[in-house]
Length: 402
Image 1 (tube, rainbow, N blue to C red):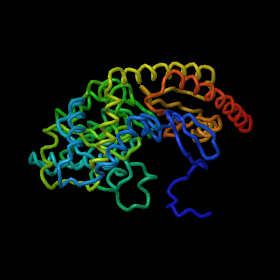
Image 2: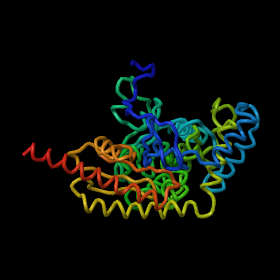
Image 3: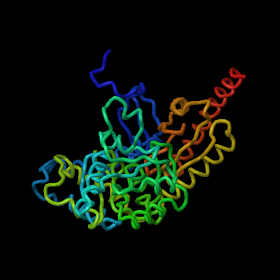
C-alpha cells in the first residue's frame, strides 16, 4: 500500500499503540524498553500521571488565544526557566529548529542594535545539527541536508569541532557570534575537550561576540544537570532548548540575557502557536517533576551507573563496542566500523530495546529521565545478546575480507 505521507523518512516497520514509564507496546503486543526516548523527547516517559493531569485540566479550559494577549502560564514557565538558568528573558516556540532560528536572529539583531550591522556571520562546527530549516541546515553545514535546496543561507562559517585555532582564524570583521552544542547529539555524542567552551567564552568576550548554546538535545536534565552548560561552568548569552521541556508535546524556547536580547523589540519576531496555553501547561508540568528535589541528582546517579555497566559491556565485547561517550542519560556507543550503527540498532531492537543511530557510527542512548536501576538491569542483557550477534557478523565480515 502506498503511503500518503511524504517519503522523507525510512520508517522502521513498527507502530506503537501505547506506553507506560519507559516501556512502549507495539501493535501485536510486543513490549520494548525505550532507550531512545523519541530522540530525547520523552523526558518523563509515557503516560506520566502528572502530565496527563495537566493536559486534561488545561484542555478543559483553553488551548489557544494567540500572543496578542497575556498568557499567565507562559509567564510562569518563563520565570521558572529564568530562575533556574543564566537567562533574563524567554521566547517560546514549537520546536528546536524554531528556537534556533530565534537565536540566530537575536544574535544578528544584537550586533545591529550595537551599531555593528555588518557583523552578521556566525561560526559553527562540523558535525553539528541545528534543525531542518534553510538557516539551520546552513548552520550545520552537512552536505546531505543542504544538497538540492539551492545556495545555502549566507552567514555561517564552519570550522572543525574542538579546534580552537580554527575558531580564532575564522573570526573576522563580519563575525557576530559563535554557535555550538555543548555535546553534539546527531554528530555522535561528541563532547568538547576540557576548556574548549571556556576558551570560546573568552573569545566572545574579547571580540564582542555572542555565545549561543544549542541545548535542544542536552537540556532539561538530560546530562545530569538541568542544562549541559553547567557541566563546564560556562554561561552562554543565548540558549535554545526544546525536546525534553515538552515531554512529548511540541515545545521549544530561546533563552537570553537582557543584553543579548536588546535588539528584539516590538514586532521583530513572532509566532502563532508558540507559547500557547496548552503547551505552557505541559511545560510547567514537566518542570514540576524535573525541578523537584533530588530528580536531577537521580538522573546523574542513574547515568553514572549506566555508564559503568556499559564500560563493562565494552570490555567484554571490545570487538563490537569501541568507545563509550556522553554524560548523564545522554550516552553513546561507538560501534566497530565493520557494522553500521543502524544495523546494531536493529539487533538491539530484536531484543526488545530501542536506541537511536547517530554520526561517527554511534548509537545513542537517550532514555526517559525517570529510569532507574531496574530499567538499567533490564537493558544490559539485551545489549549483551545484541553484542553476541554483532560479534558473529563482524567476525564473518573479517573472514570474508581476508
